[in-house]
Length: 343
Ligand SMILES: *Cc1c(COP(=O)(O)O)cnc(C)c1O
Image 1: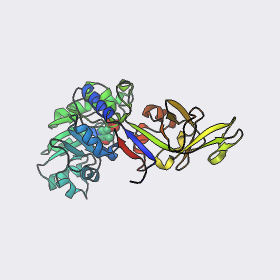
Image 2: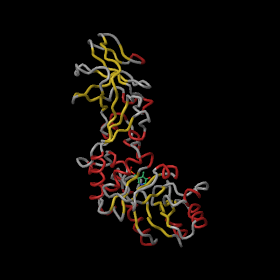
Image 3: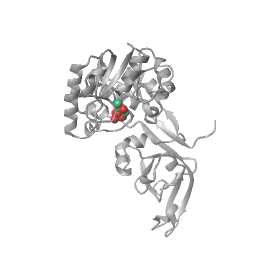
Image 4: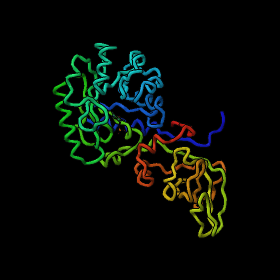
């Protein structure tokens, strides 16, 4: 196989340990959001690893994502969050997943094409993104609802809206019969077991994201990008490096050029902020991020040479602070040029 000079190291043990922690503290059972190809890590690989430790409920956004998962292990269920649109009937009737019905139109469509067949439902309790409004719940009559869910808008903050949505969801639960009720995402789980109901739907925290302080010390980093050194060179005092000559050496500096750049999802906002880690040494980025290249100051790593690998600093909360990107964008933006390598 052709050598790939970029890889994403993925830690099975950390993924499984994150799921176990979320499952335990939720006070209910944890499923897993594996949309966007498992937040960029690989939905098939994530699903296999999490079903292996007892996760039974998975969520994707679209029917194409559901199909891409292929055959799921026995006893595992899948839901499609965007529901059943005008062109989704064939996929939805194939039985590979339940639709999460989001609108009165989708509810009417499901009643017509699959009367009595199990579905999930999203109710809007204050986010105004997707979901049946609480004043139109009567459209749900005669549906066979497996999981009735709502979604928190501000769970990563100490917002009054959290409690309001919780109270509204309790009202919905009292009014609409379903097998199970589900409210919390990763951040919602951190708000405590009141938010747990029967099933929680973590995404970000499974993959090493820290949605709230409560998760500190419990959630482990799962994904670490690594790039190869193409050249080591000496930049003389007074010389600059990279586009725009934004960085100028004040003394002779050892630089290593790594084959990673913004086209890989390592965006320009890491300039002056990001770093590589080699043998425990932090080697800061110098100059701009190019499309496929960055430079690091490797003076502290005298042995680093062509063909060596350097891990990029990518602890999600810290990388988010440094770059101004969200932890979600940091994961889902990593390109296909990274070879995904699971431990
Ligand atoms: C993406 C998503 C989740 C997971 O959210 P995280 O913040 O990543 O934990 C849960 N529920 C719904 C409806 C979603 O769209």
